Image 1 (cartoon, one colour):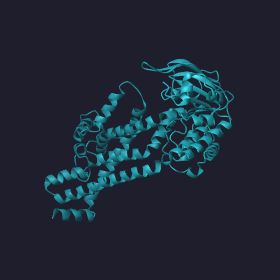
Image 2 (tube, chains in turn blue, green):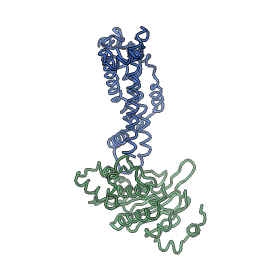
Image 3 (cartoon, one colour):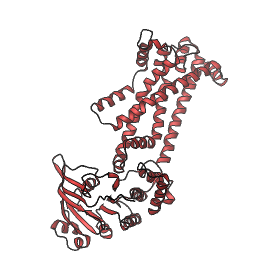
Image 4 (cartoon, chains in turn cyan, green):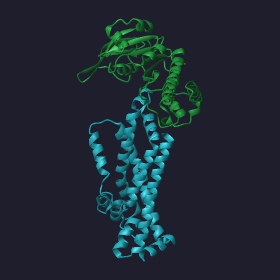
Length: 229
Length: 240
């Protein structure tokens, strides 16, 4: 009964449902874009630079991969609330706030996975590139380029995390109908209201997206293996 | 077009390399001059690969000094090395060579021309677009040689260049080495294959226990070694 109505909602292109899906994708994609701008250079730096306290930073970044979304949400909420340090921006309960919270959630994942990838490759390339007299700039460029397929899968892992989390966007977005309601917050709300068809429909769309991302990541990895060996 | 300065003679003076209490090289002196390929031979663990890394400039000795053509420092990019297990960049065969030629101010036409020459020299043209890491061991070794030679080094260090290769692949690799030596590149190669040393090299340095025990013309060394250790090594005995 509920499943059938959910199916109708999804297949009939229900505008409310698709607005929610669109917002979710836009917020998570923007968050991943920002997180990668910070996370990839940071990961590459951690992989290549040697400085005191490096191990501690690596452990910290790795630990941050498991940040609870509600804690990130709460922290961003405190920063952006009217009396908080960034309260004057007035962006609490907007999609911008949601992007910030998700970017914080995803950046450590991208940084940690990038570090691992680049460090493994560097240990393999080090002698060769040193013997070729390759300078630091070309070194980083060569590593990033040769790791490109692995890095794409890193981005997809970050996107999967962002799209599936509910705690952070719920707290800083406020789950406002038609404005900050995402798939995950809508599912939480509709389930508690007892409107199961919409919740199930959104759940199915979310699952499809997550499966699609993973299939894509798998494809990228396979293609990369064939293409780069 | 080689700059007028030269890395030869390459002089290692009383080189000691210590890792903890272990001396991998023990006050070793060796002078590398232009001429026929030099084979560095000796038992496993004698310090042959470490010697190559020191001469290349990849590793600084614990004690002693290296000079390249009389200079205490010289740009590493002037020399070439093929490691025992060369790292293949995750790119095509052609792109591996082109990368090695990058970052030294070559015009792109010159870079492309040199890449093609290197491919031809190693008979890799049919494989030019293949991912380097999908090549066979012998093909990878040829690519590693082509990549190092494309940079037109004055000295080329080789660490077991035909290790684990079948006879046909070994032949192909040796042809490239002979070619390079013929065109004036000083070859310094570590090998455990005495037949290969006889086939390719004009002089031999025999190392055991981190010390240089003999250095001289290959023919004389193989016919009549001066030290007991070298004689035992050539007989096939275990030398420590």
